[in-house]
Amino acid sequence: MIAFILRKLATLAPTFLGITLIAFALIHAIPGDPVEVMVGEHMLDPVAHQEALHRLGLDLPLPVQYGHYLLQLLHGNLGDSLATHEPIWNDFLARFPATIELSLVAIVLAVLVGIPMGVIAAIKRGSLVDRAAMGLALTGYSMPIFWWGLMLIKVFSVQLGWTPVSGRIGIEFDIDPHTGFMLIDVLMAPDKGAFCSAVLHLVLPGIVLATVPMAVIARMTRSSMLEVLREDYIRAARARGLSPFRVVIVHGLRNALLPVITVIGLQTGSLLAGAVLTETVFAWPGIGKWLVDAILNRDYPVAQAGILIVATVIVAVNFLVDVLYGVVNPRLRGGAA
Image: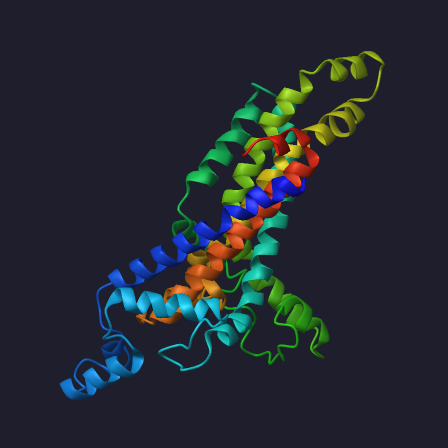
């Protein structure tokens, strides 16, 4: 098992190096001048502009800038924002709880809906229920997140007025960010209406972010359940007169959950990528919107750090899933995969 973990760890170093190189290259390929974005194109004379570029180190050749970037990372320094001049790590810590809270709500919703949908579709294989469930799953997987979010806003926020359009809580509430997790912080607030407001603000972005993982989980659950339901021990359980619930849930679903759990872990990591669009549409103050704003403002250090952090979380989750899968399935430990 130790050798299996070491093999997995050995692949992380080149992966992170590749991530830093791609992030650096893509950010610097974006047209525009960060100094002009910060102070305005017509408010800076050429001499002051050149001095600002020199002060920020942006006049150096790109390989030299990349080398400085790697040295900063090796010392655990993500750098400072060009726009706010604040340490990037502080900005990240202030926004990360919002993204984690939204992602947790989304993955819980995806699991609570996706697994029962897949189980029912497997039991009713070939029926109208099966086709409808898998059709919905395929639609959810194919639907653009930004379009889906805008449609939900138009219907439930604009036309029906049931949910807020954006933000984490109503502007009438002043909540101290003790933990950064709004659902926890509002419980400490004296105004009990703040909790309802926080929940309502989570509904639409949670549904939008949960749509894709919900579809993936539902399809994987159906596929895994169909394989398990054809096993001999399932037929033997039915022959012994066990109830359909016990056959399907206790004997079937329990043995079909291994690949489903793997998919849930992978989808949890990918939620951070989906959060970029979701947070932008709903003006959710997490790292996704922070990253988009940094790219629009040509804030190179923030954009590079944001991409690196998101990629690191995804790689870490995938690594943990691989390790857990190796623990559950010992046959994987002998190979290089």
